[in-house]
Image (cartoon, rainbow, N blue to C red; front, side, top):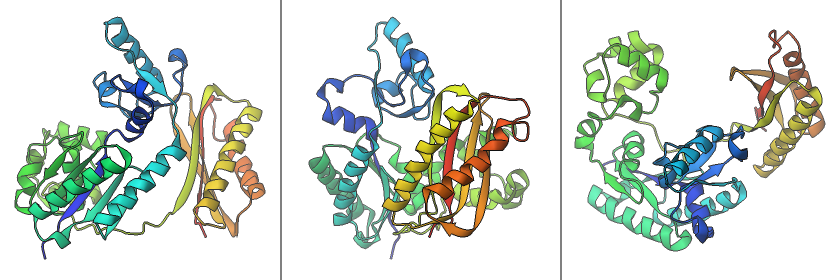
Amino acid sequence: MVRIIAHLDMDAFFAAIEERDTPALRGIPLVVGADPLGGRGRGVVSTSNYLARAYGIHSATPISVAWRLSEAARRAGKPAVAFVSVDMPKYAHVSAEIMGVVRRFIPVVEQASIDETYGDLSFTESYQAAALLSQELKAAIYTTVRLTASVGIGPNKLIAKIASGMSKPDGLTVVCEEDAESFLAPLPLRAIPGIGPKTEGLLARQGFTCVQDVKALTAVQFNGLLGKRGVDLYEKVRGRDITPLEEHTEIKSISEQHTLETDTLDSQRLLRELELLGKGVMDRLRQEGFQSFRTVVLTVRFADFKTTSRAHTLVEPAGNMATLRREILRLLMPFLDRRENPLRQRIRLLGIRVEKLI
């Protein structure tokens, strides 16, 4: 039986929900994320709608940069950006509604994130039938939650994922197995999952700018350039991917992080922030059905954006706030003196993660 995989990606998900729920936000550039504080905000953009993206504002853009881009557009006579805070409980509720619709149409699905999922459409037995079913699914989602989704269909997860982003918003892109290589050939290297800015730069220095260029490399040459990742990317640029759908993805860690309003080395402020993060982690631990953890990880980002993580694994599992608080304090202290912070840099961001969940 021919393998047919779909990737469904909600369009500007957080922003689209806010536009749906607040008519005044429709038809204007919109950013969901941290408070810009008049250009002094320190977080990042979570989601921007397509009008804001036209200003150069995308996910993970520093919120201060988003503010400056909005102000530049306003001075040029364009609409200013509306900034809205993240409402994760609301988005999670909508996501659950969408997944309920998806499972009515597709028996085997893998939810990849809050706003995207893979589905095995092999049971349709043809790309044409898979496309028709996907159109019906998109319509059912819109009827249920009044939001649009884009779908990519291909012979594997790799092709489906790339295809879903080709004609947003409200798109449907079908790539048959025999067309997979030609579909990828003209795309920039960054379109391939696993090729980030550093790998892209390394390949660019060798004269490679698009997928077609690197297909001239042998597997051995790929390994020489990229090490152990070379074999994986050698297969990907040829449109080959045997990664299975995982219906029940195991949660391996739970984390919370926050960018501080101002950089600081004030231990009391840092401990207050860590207390809030720790309570968030413990709440989510219970919500996900876990009783305890064994590894605690503290992440610190300094004012110069250097980021360091330190971890400690307990001899016995623990599941209480008192233990988490004690371990985080132990991990934090070296960052307040010259052991982990010889230049006495102020701290910009803190994060807590627990692993080895039980």
